[in-house]
Image (tube, rainbow, N blue to C red; front, top):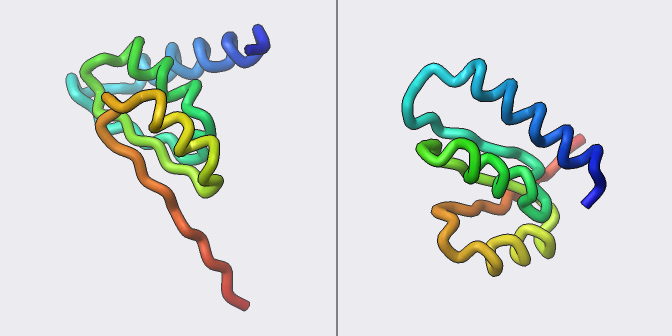
Length: 82
Protein backbone atom coordinates (compact mmCIF):
# COMPACT_ATOMS: atom_id res chain seq x y z
CA UNK A 1 0.00 0.00 0.00
CA UNK A 2 1.45 3.32 -1.07
CA UNK A 3 1.96 6.04 1.62
CA UNK A 4 0.04 8.58 -0.47
CA UNK A 5 -2.97 6.25 -0.53
CA UNK A 6 -2.89 5.94 3.27
CA UNK A 7 -2.53 9.72 3.68
CA UNK A 8 -5.41 10.35 1.29
CA UNK A 9 -7.73 7.96 3.16
CA UNK A 10 -6.71 9.49 6.49
CA UNK A 11 -7.45 12.99 5.20
CA UNK A 12 -10.82 11.86 3.79
CA UNK A 13 -11.86 10.38 7.12
CA UNK A 14 -10.81 13.51 9.00
CA UNK A 15 -12.97 15.57 6.64
CA UNK A 16 -15.93 13.18 7.04
CA UNK A 17 -15.73 13.46 10.82
CA UNK A 18 -16.04 17.25 10.51
CA UNK A 19 -19.31 16.96 8.59
CA UNK A 20 -21.05 14.00 10.21
CA UNK A 21 -23.81 15.45 12.35
CA UNK A 22 -25.56 12.31 13.56
CA UNK A 23 -24.35 9.60 15.93
CA UNK A 24 -24.98 6.70 13.51
CA UNK A 25 -24.60 7.94 9.94
CA UNK A 26 -25.19 5.90 6.81
CA UNK A 27 -22.20 6.11 4.47
CA UNK A 28 -22.11 4.75 0.90
CA UNK A 29 -18.78 4.50 -0.87
CA UNK A 30 -19.34 4.28 -4.60
CA UNK A 31 -16.42 2.68 -6.40
CA UNK A 32 -15.09 0.87 -3.33
CA UNK A 33 -12.97 -1.59 -5.37
CA UNK A 34 -11.02 -3.81 -2.97
CA UNK A 35 -12.38 -2.08 0.14
CA UNK A 36 -9.37 -0.28 1.62
CA UNK A 37 -11.39 2.87 2.37
CA UNK A 38 -14.31 0.82 3.73
CA UNK A 39 -11.97 -0.85 6.23
CA UNK A 40 -10.55 2.53 7.29
CA UNK A 41 -14.02 4.01 7.73
CA UNK A 42 -15.11 0.98 9.76
CA UNK A 43 -12.12 1.42 12.06
CA UNK A 44 -12.48 5.19 12.57
CA UNK A 45 -16.29 5.48 12.41
CA UNK A 46 -17.43 2.41 14.36
CA UNK A 47 -21.01 3.64 14.85
CA UNK A 48 -21.60 4.30 11.15
CA UNK A 49 -23.50 1.93 8.89
CA UNK A 50 -21.13 1.62 5.95
CA UNK A 51 -22.00 0.25 2.52
CA UNK A 52 -19.86 -0.23 -0.54
CA UNK A 53 -20.80 -0.44 -4.20
CA UNK A 54 -18.69 -1.17 -7.23
CA UNK A 55 -19.28 -2.14 -10.83
CA UNK A 56 -16.09 -4.25 -11.06
CA UNK A 57 -17.02 -7.62 -9.61
CA UNK A 58 -13.76 -9.44 -8.78
CA UNK A 59 -12.05 -7.02 -6.32
CA UNK A 60 -15.39 -6.36 -4.61
CA UNK A 61 -16.14 -10.07 -4.15
CA UNK A 62 -12.61 -10.61 -2.85
CA UNK A 63 -13.18 -7.87 -0.27
CA UNK A 64 -16.50 -9.38 0.82
CA UNK A 65 -14.87 -12.81 1.11
CA UNK A 66 -12.23 -11.42 3.48
CA UNK A 67 -14.71 -9.38 5.52
CA UNK A 68 -17.60 -11.73 6.16
CA UNK A 69 -18.68 -9.56 9.10
CA UNK A 70 -19.18 -6.55 6.84
CA UNK A 71 -22.91 -5.82 7.05
CA UNK A 72 -23.77 -5.10 3.45
CA UNK A 73 -22.47 -5.29 -0.08
CA UNK A 74 -24.06 -4.46 -3.39
CA UNK A 75 -22.98 -4.70 -6.98
CA UNK A 76 -24.40 -2.23 -9.46
CA UNK A 77 -25.13 -2.88 -13.10
CA UNK A 78 -24.91 0.29 -15.16
CA UNK A 79 -26.45 0.51 -18.58
CA UNK A 80 -26.01 3.39 -21.01
CA UNK A 81 -28.50 4.02 -23.80
CA UNK A 82 -28.21 6.27 -26.80
